[in-house]
Image (cartoon, rainbow, N blue to C red):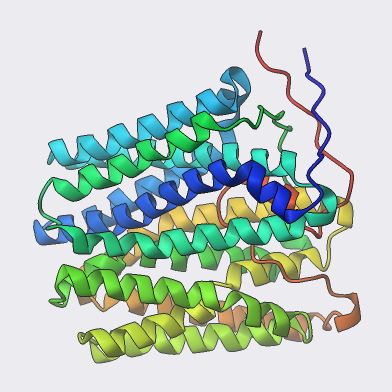
Length: 431
């Protein structure tokens, strides 16, 4: 049977944060652990002499698992409820981390990273549906912003954990596993009940491409670029001789660039033709990446500055691409469109580490940033082409820019651009 959801009584942001503080704290633990694990795996495998192609396969496995989980993990949540599902996903993710430390079998590592990606999709979906349930329509935009800031800040802080111990030892794997388990504590103690899971819908990529070719290609490019850096940025640092502490600083400073750029990009995006902004940002990000590749930057300071600039210009491309698409879809289709665009991003993210690792194998460590620059130049060329094919949308008719977390389609329900008061059909729990 279908349970009727409780009314959304939380009409202020403070009330939502108080009610969902435990869930947000658990999410911060998980995001920090995930950011640290990407850096640790890259440093660990690179130090062991594993080929960049194999490292890319390990990293791509995570994003493939995330893609599969975003499409199917809601079935587990519906079957057992949010709190128990959260416990299952977090415990399974912690187990994968400990098994990574206990085995050197790379085939096992690939499988474990795929399982971890699936679990993280389930964790994201659980938390996002909780937030959707508690946030009234009037404050869902601010709730969305808090969620995005917590996510970005925690992921950026993750690589700093490499400074706590030798990456070659067992200790950092243990610390990351502890963070996964620690996320269970506040969530298990929360008094917030289980909301319903709504049936997810998304527009097909073919239809989305017909509506906004640039939106689909932009999301695909963002997936290729972001996953390549997340997966192999630490490998680059290790390969050019940076100590683990410097690698962690490089990764964190770069990711902070993407976090800090969201507000100014949003302001400019809502005041001009988004395509002009996208073209400028893409070219600047490509130039920063190309500089690292061409000059073989090895010193921490110039590397961090260029990385900061690259991510500040490149990371918001996903949000810009979603906004560009939403300017041309009906308001009732915002949420399904977001689901389809996330699928495009996820496809790119699953391929990115494999493709960039192949570039590193062919031309050395700089191949990572050479690949990123090439992909971004391709997006710039396509943007310029689309600007000649379609007249600009009047600024007055454009929607609002909102930074979109690249997690699951459930987050789109918090998007303030989505229709107010409309919800997808609830899914009945299994008897």
